[in-house]
Image (cartoon, rainbow, N blue to C red; front, side, top):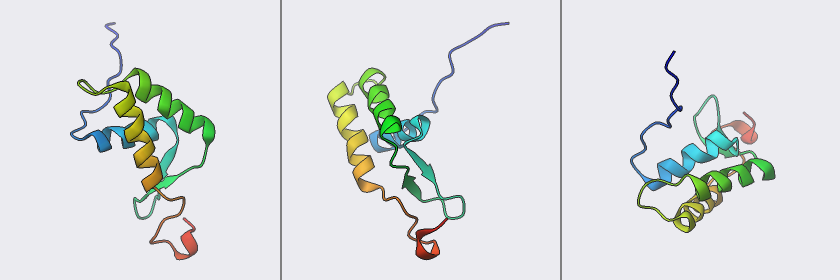
Length: 89
């Protein structure tokens, strides 16, 4: 059987790539009801995301730019869903 390396889906923007990396690392997840991204506040998952960004960035992007984008996306995501009552989802 031919085995290939699993490839990430094609991402059109650097921000989309960073969101994908954060989801893959388990640093963020979606509200199941509304789809908003929520920060899991897991320092180990954040570090995994930074490692992925540092070592597997998109073509044409430096490791520093990739890590900066992951940090920027993390700073823009809250830990509650704005549509759920009391932020509980």
